[in-house]
Structure formats: C-alpha cells, structure tokens
Length: 480
Image 1 (tube, rainbow, N blue to C red):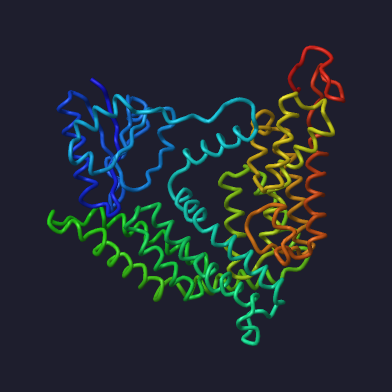
Image 2 (cartoon, rainbow, N blue to C red):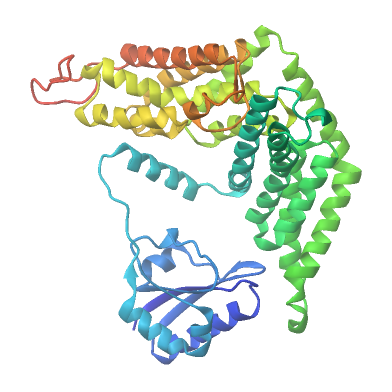
C-alpha cells in the first residue's frame, strides 16, 4: 500500500477540479492505496497538503489543466496528467503514476554563494506568514509594473525632454513612451498591489474586489497607502464571506464568480469612497509634502534610518518595510527615498566583496571565493548576498554592513539623488533620467562600500594560519 498526494485544478476551478479529485480518490482506494487530494478551485485551495503529507508520500500526482507550482515537491516523484484522464479512469492514472513518476530535480548544493542566498531566501519565504506575507505577495506582483513604468518614463524624458507629456509633443516617440509608462504601467501599480494582497489572503475570489479597491485608492488620491488598506479589507472580507456564506449545492458555482466578487467589491468600494479614501489621501499628501520639502538635516536622518533598515536583516521584514515605503512613494513622484534604499541595499555585499579582496587574512578560502559572487549580487541590488557571511559571524558582519548602508543612504539623501525605478542595481544607472545626480549617487554607493569594508577590517580578527596574502601558512583556524 502506498500513500499518495495529489493536486487537481482546471481553468474555471469548478466542475472538473472536483470531479478529477473524486476520480483519483476512488481509483486509489480501489487499488488499496491511501490518497489526499488538494483541490485548487475557484474558491481557493481546499484540503491543502501539509509538509507532513508531502514528506510521507511515495508519489505526487498533478491532474491539472492549469499551471501548478511544484516548488513544494522538490525531491519527490511527480506524475503530471490532465483532469480529463483522472475523471475518465482514476485507477489507471494512479497505477501509471506509481510506475512512471519522475523525481523533481534538486538544486546543486555546496559552498556556492548564489545557492546559499537562494536557499536563505526560500527559507525566509517559507517561514513568513500573516499580514507580512500578504503584503509581500502584493509587492512582488507590483514590482514589474513599477520597473517597466519607471524606465519607460525615464526613456520618454530622454527622447522628448521633461515636458514630453504636453499636447504639443503628441504623436512623438517620447510622448508615446510616456503614455505607456505613466498613464498605463504606473496607473496599474496600486490596483495590482491591492489585488494581489487580497489574492494572497482569499485566493482567486479576492482578486477582483482587491483590484477594484486599488483602483478606488488611485482615484481618491490615497495612493499606495490606500491600496494596501483596500487589499487587506477586500481579502479578509472575501475570506470571511467564503467561509460563512453557505449556499445550496446547486448554487455553489455562482459563489466564486458572482456572489463573492459582488459583495466584497461593494463592501470595499463603499468603504474606500465614504470612509477611507479622503483621510488616507490627506495623510499621503502630508507625507509627500514633507518629503519634498526636507532640509538637509532631516534628509540625512531619513537616509540613515532607511540605510540601517536595509542592512539590518538583509531582505527580511525590516529591509522589506524600508523598500516598500520607498517603492510606494514612486507613484507620488517622490524618488529620493528609492535612491537611498537601493544604494544602501547594494553596499552590504559590495563591502564584503571588497573586504575579502583587501583583507584576505580575515576570511577563509571559501569566504574569499564567495566574495566574487557577492560582488555580482551587490551590483545587482541583491542585499541577501551578505546573509551567508552574516550567518557565520553575525556580531562583526551585521554592525559593519549597517554602518556602511547608513552612510550610503544618508549621502544619497543629502546629495538629492533620485531613482525612478525600484530595482536593477548598476544596470539602470546608464539609462538617461533613471537616476538624478548620478555622479554623487555613485559617490554615495562607493562611500558605503568603503565604510563597510573598513568596519570589517576593524571588527574582524585575522584567522590563525592565514597570511595577509590569503595563503595558508599553518592549520586554518576560525575567527576569534
């Protein structure tokens, strides 16, 4: 007797999803096997597979006509087929799966820094939950729209000047690029953010009310703050309705496509128009006005705070809070915090890479080799490149990178550097108008990198048996 787990899913998420589940259930039982089937239907995932279920399974069956995320099943034997096959002959599908399923390949392991960073990011993603997870889901889906929109706006200014959007330039290439970037890509930023926050909470039924709430956040002027509130309200309202609204089986098909979207959209829409929109809009306008009128002293303090947050947990909740704050402000044309955040996020791995190059006697052979990859991650704005170093020596590495990032963030703000896109590292620097005050922005990044490396020199101790050139002269010890 084998224990089997399965997932069924069809494009509409109604009939075939559940018929396939029933077919697999009957088929497995007729062959003397046990099975647990997760249905990814129109009201979201039901009978969800746990880590224990997956660990105990001999084989995983995916009977789906839509894309199913297989990341949970790395190292397990997987057999993929259609819902039609499971409905037609579930026993045959189960028998074939046990004979023909193939192992989901595992990433290579070892000391490679990129693999370590990927593993650390995956571990963090698996461990987070609740509101933070929902917010990060919305941010991750929003980012491509912000990146594309920001770069298109920058290119529009490069081709047509800062007044490219005026009617006098209508029909020109610059005007067309601006129309794609600002009124289109950027306009979708808040609805996508709100929609996928709601999607993370309530699955597919939450998407429509979340996006509608996000559109109302944009139209009421409450921006990304209103979008975040709209997403959470829509998601939890939809989830509550889905769990508490019991309908006859004959009407259950109407629940995900009519009843839940209608009631949730009505609820979140009325709240945004009559209760939330105006107060949040006023708060956002006040924040925007303060940021735009900052004097150098307050800019310095904000840069120090954002920079320190970016390095504190290297991609964790504190880092993401600073990043989300800066990204959200792009829609309000406030771009100095974004520049500070990216500079501060680049310097931890860059500083570590420089330190492994200059101060070889303070790092093991493996760390010096990893420093080369850390440089690539740093220029790509992947702060998590510092995690493996921090994990080995947290009390010296974390303070070092926090000081370096604080310097980079503060200098960026004081110099008035701006950044129109939320990602890209050095690869966006050559794009015209993507970065404001590019020479001094480069100085901020270099200064943060140098300070990080200098702090590492001061705080880390030479490793016994390793010379300043990095050569092993005796048995290699550990850092003090």
